[in-house]
Length: 159
Image (cartoon, rainbow, N blue to C red; front, side, top):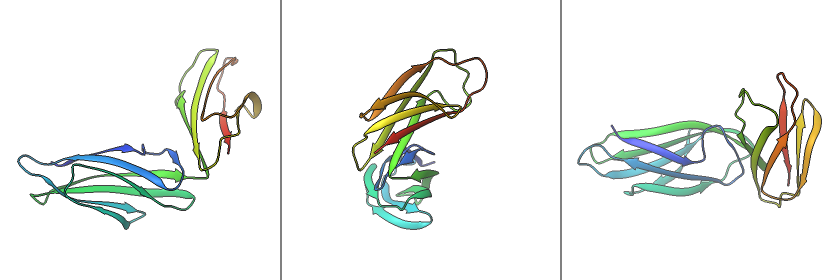
């Protein structure tokens, strides 16, 4: 079976346009990769040739989009990965903690952001109350005192 691995973007992440897509494919035994297609919301947007990996960018409007990255090999077999991404003007991705994770206090909040503009500030809200602020930088790493119980955390980057 032909295997396709997408390295960028990760499924479900927030991104800005253009969306960078990096992927590689492993052909079936004794075959070689012959073609690539990347589809955005069901429309073919990128066609690649006989290469083992691709690195391309696609423009997309703001909102949620479905990406399908597909490769074929010389036997006619194909493999693909389908996933969604959220396109915005500022993309914030929280790497810690994961949604629903149990944490101890202080809770470590780690996030990164990308934007066509400079990130001018950050704010972290816990249960709708400002818990931390930071000026500038493409990431934030904050340790916050949290009371026992379930909390809603919002991480916002300004750009």
